[in-house]
Image 1 (cartoon, rainbow, N blue to C red):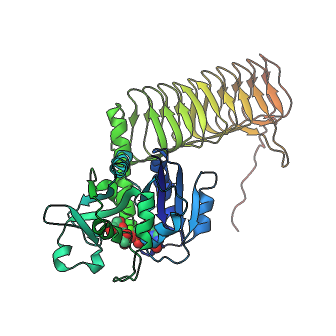
Image 2: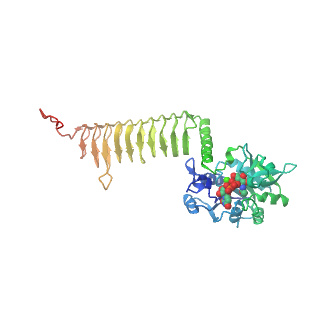
Image 3: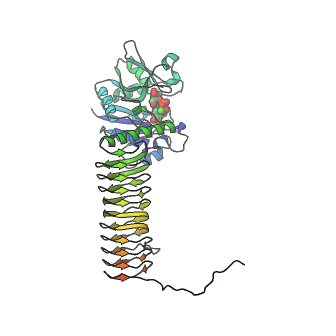
Length: 453
Ligand code: UD1
Ligand code: CA
């Protein structure tokens, strides 16, 4: 039996108080809906159908390139109405799994349990026991404990409001049966909506067996309706990520103060200080140390490399035993071969630096190819841009660039060459020799500073 997933995502999200459609709000750097789609994907369904409404175009655009089928719900007449729109031509024998775009933390294992119950011919509802159930639909059970109905908070009696078992909004049912039931829904309730939850009462009346699958924890069924819940979800998600990494041996000095927006893969004995943001795909080799306040994106860091405080790494291949920062910026296209030092206030882009080379202070390196054992002095600038085109600087192995040098590209510094401090180099320099361009120093004897009149 194949599964077709339907994700309800047409709601406005009024309580977010934002112009952004609710399901596009970011959780760990990705839209809420992306988390739900990812979980759905892992079930390998026949199709993932998304019901969109508010800001539908923006939502669709954000997911361009993903295999999703879109169903527009222009009037939000309720969850039952949304499912009715998305069900046509789902093969009757499929399992329809209904997910919510604003319930992003649900675990794949839980979804599998729901689907398994539906495959066994039941109507399966994901439920949870909440300390504070207010706002949620309540699970009503009969004398023998079987589920008999779901009553929305707004429609519930005082006695029903005391029930702490709630409907999470997620359910699974054979698609053909579900289609017949949603066609019978009526909007005679407090909100004047077609409630998907009324399907439960219909199923019981039809003699179908309705079962609850209880969520592993309150956390996974958290629905995001406002910014406080979004922050709660962010915290829960972060805990999951850091717990998994800590189980693998990673040391977080404070696992509550790190952000992983993407995937972080770590070797042994990695230590991560607080307030570091990882984005995209980041791999840290054995023994990597990340000091506080850095942002590291799409980068591979070799074993033993240290990132000192306040670095921005926008992409890069960093070899073993490198030392970066404090206050260094690596823009895309950089490869540091190994045992390379990039010091404070160094900006580097689209360049390769060979083994054991040092660029220690206040320097801009762009479009350069730097060999091994090179020392670049403080305040050196590769003048790579002539206002129209970018040009390359090549520095041979063992070269020594004095402080305050301008290398006007295209230019090549020979291996073992020494460039005198303060030089502006516009022509290639021979290997092994000292080259400098420096205006003569002069002293004007007896010169007096002007004084105020
Ligand atoms: C729903 C359930 C409630 C459950 C709660 C769990 C119903 C009637 N109620 O209530 O039992 O406890 O979720 O979070 O199902 N949506 C549409 N089209 C619509 C209406 C909603 O696509 O016309 C989408 C929303 O974008 C959202 C989801 O369906 O993703 C749930 O809708 P929402 O209005 O948040 O329902 P709740 O009142 O939270
Ligand atoms: Ca909701």
